[in-house]
Length: 282
Image (cartoon, rainbow, N blue to C red; front, side):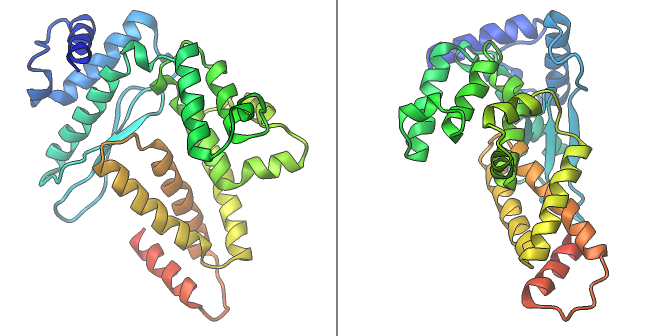
């Protein structure tokens, strides 16, 4: 732990030379420090040259507690984990979580190396009840994860987040299974999607998939959205990276908007009534 703290102080001294490492996380102006951190990174090594800067999003609410998200260059997303009584406080808290993760991301242990890949694959095998042989088979989830890590050797985990989120969404959306039925290997799918960013076009395509699923199984979108909202809130309160959960919510909300605007004269079921309630909530 002492070594980690010392490493963080060293990183702060390099990236934020005008700041006192001992006071960084106590400074109320943490929003400007996060911006300064990423501006410094871009100047030093042109990190994420095609990406925008730090972006904040505050959820509309009539009163406290307030929720704020911050998205970093490269796509990683964090939120305030404390109960905040003002929007400014929520924004500062989200910035603090993002700054801590940004600094930890600079540690050598967060860079994708052969040793990191070996440890990550072993953890993936343990969590999926698979075997190490799966790591060499790109048709398996572990093998696809192994391939993604090797394809991004030298990057940090925050730089890897965009592709990782796309893969998670494809798996959750059922797109990987559908593509395998067309004889496309996971390796080919990953190579294809590595060329693209997670944008409105990709979200719209995934939302259309869920609209089709709703026609086959009425109520599934409302069920998935409730789950996504709960997962997002739990992850935010735990200070975790939120991109996957937030994208799930955005895709399902987009599908929900289309479903609610589609005139359906059939009599409403309990699931459809719940869907209408979620439409109103959205």
